[in-house]
Length: 467
Image (spheres, rainbow, N blue to C red):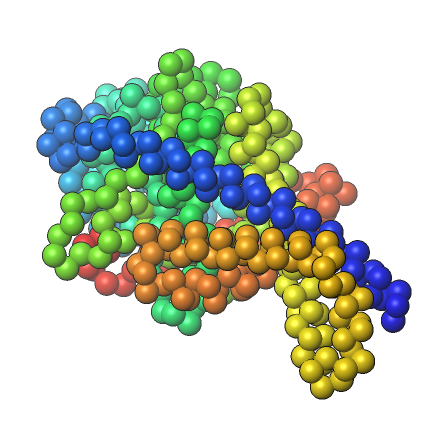
């Protein structure tokens, strides 16, 4: 028992130090955000208005949508986008495969009614990868333009399950090509309170897409694409095409990776954070200009999706992107890649907490256990001080998450987000284990990691979620 408690104490110390370092990292980002955002408010910059959007002539925009076995949602997505968009000069190019007739039929049904929809059929069967499909769509756009079609100066990347904001194309037209990449926030659609797995996406995206990316933009002048709601300058994509395929077919997160390879002299990428003017009956969360969609509600689907993200961002990103120059860039890359450590230590933290609580409860009825608890956490020792610091960081993280969730999903989600936090850590831990397994298999066999497609759903209601 003495040896066991000695090992537990050492593990407790390592976990406590890891929590403190991660907490300091998060605290720096939070404080940087509040300081920079406060100075921005003090400058009183004029806010963009609807009239500003209307004054800019409409460029032709191509919305590109990769689709493999998306017949259940693609028709609804296209219909709603065409009906609600407040932008006229655009076309939608949907990438399909020869061996996926149901998806082709769903796209054909909409294309026959609206000439702005173009079905692209790749020259090989699927499934391949999202990046492969996107490259096929880009080739089809070039052929369409060569045949006399209008040149698209803006390329907007969306998925087949997206609820595209009615003003999304207006903002892309206003900001591109002044910026070579414009990213809209991604906001998960609301789900019943008991769907904890889907709810964890709201909690994580609320902070990442309204604060973390905002800080990254100011530290690095570069914003990573989220894979949806991303507007690219055609000039930037054409420049990338000179060096090979626009999207890397070997990457599971080609959207994230392309952000590091794009660029134009004197231009930068940005995250758009814009709130509609308040209207009666409109929730604060629906006022945000964003791309909305449903995310997986089952544990298994969430693990598979997050494992794919972890492989692409952490492992493949490390290999393909490396560590770029600049302190700000390296810091943000570290934050992207520290997931391989934090996912593990988060779960260890829960286990250590459970051990301490169990020992404390046992000591209430069995005085001899108090000695075991003191052996693990000596009174006045460094571990107790570390525990107090960790409690502060946990409280701080809960407050920051609550602020972000209230801003994006509504304040009624705050209590649920607190309850969902441990479950999110469990999902992320098992996603990391799956990522390790798939990467190890790839290294041992020499085979590329296969793209793991997520099953998609679309809102049944025809009501506009942004109102």
